[in-house]
Amino acid sequence: MKMIKKEVVFYVLVIAVTTIIKIICAPNIALSGATGILAVALFTGLNKAYNTRNAFLLPLAALLISNTVLQLLHSLNMFPFEGFYKWQLAEYSLVVVLTAVGMLFRKAKTAGVFIAAFAGPTLFYIISNYITWAVSWQAMGYTHDMPGLMNCYVQGLPFYRNSLISTVIMLPAIILAYRWIVMRKAGFALVK
Image (cartoon, rainbow, N blue to C red; front, side, top):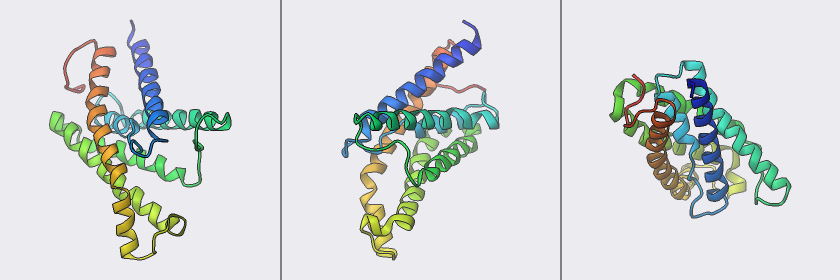
């Protein structure tokens, strides 16, 4: 199979898995925050096979397609909330930031993968909870002061835990899938 076909198979698989994870986990409060999107963003940033422009395409496409599927399911009364919402630009922006975080760790090899797997969800948690507090503090029941911000971070801890666990699992899984599907090699090392 040619390299382009292998990459298309890989992209379709990644987008399908991240969408399925979102469909299963997002409506369940105990699983909410579990996502494959953060791992995809970190993977494309870490992978030297992707130039700077292309590194941002797969995670943004995966996010857009998964949100479109959720919106469609919601319109058919098959999903509890909309795929597109008011502050969504922040989510897309954070995916871009996490891709850039992955790029920062490209030279760190295997250690970079594990550092990025922890740094990415942590950064996402810090920034997204700040944005939630800053723009939705009244709707979410927070006070607009330091205790309200701290309360927002405390309330976000279960989401952070789930995003951290899912990223620590998904990032190596995506790397292994990429190596097996695209490169036809076993192992964990990214493209050199």
